[in-house]
Length: 369
Image 1 (spheres, helix red, strand yellow):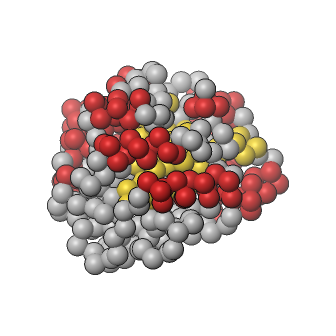
Image 2 (tube, one colour; image 1 turned 30 degrees about the vertical axis):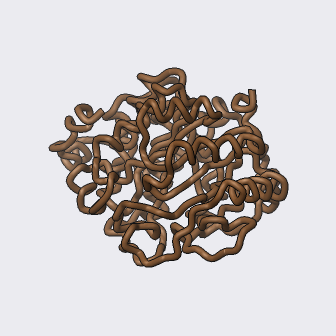
Image 3 (cartoon, helix red, strand yellow; image 1 turned 90 degrees about the vertical axis):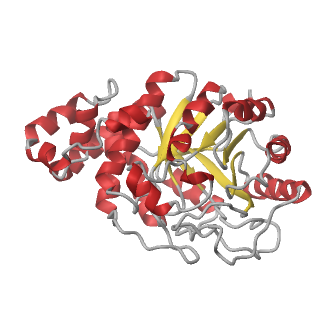
């Protein structure tokens, strides 16, 4: 994957954008949906000139989404079980140097949280999250997954990058998938924000989705953290990564998220602001370029903005999210990883979806089977 990205290290984005014309972009929009677009067709959809065609892109994105996904939105929730982290990432509330209260849930506490989420919230799809630390051993993760599989049809992890063999062990324990964000695809910029710990290894992190796919994990989600590198370049390179994965690992289902930096304890402010309009354009470009990829929107975004994104290509939606360890049923005495903007309950989000003609999906039947 690194060799593919190297092709664009010296690429002149501005020159490419200057040579585009609106008729080229309109033709790309028209042809999208039947297959994955090539690299430069995708990049054209991210261009400043394409921003004048968002309405056309939105109509096509809506048609593509209904063709491949219907009007179903999969509901999931995050479960944080540890905020102990060995990394020093300048944008994260869990970074090693932050003097926050650290917490590492016991198996009994994990089960209590699982029971609350599954029975009180009605959620059947969970993302298990930790800080990136050696304390989150394979045995700890393996036992945690076995506990969660008693209550959830789908269990996905967002933890430190693991080896293929480690993913295979967790797959045997019932793991369904992995979320891993590269955070920043521009290699030199990446080193600016990751100062200590295993996360400083850009290449090992970049190859994590590949190792997960080789371990037969079904659901793999990637993305960049908008606010670190150049937004258009980051959106483009994340799409190139997604395309590589889709084309090479046919047994896995791939999705992409579009997280923007949010307020967190002692974190940096974003250096590259991604406006709502830019965000919408990136989402539309992903849908048009990768018609069968999932697109996840979390509670990082405000409720009104999230709701307006629904017709544009979204397939997965977090609900009732808590980003602190033990925050659902245990005492709320640890710092959240970041602040959320959509504080609605699961029931409120379900009501909103139904009002707008969408069917909320709680159980991933393939995962259950």
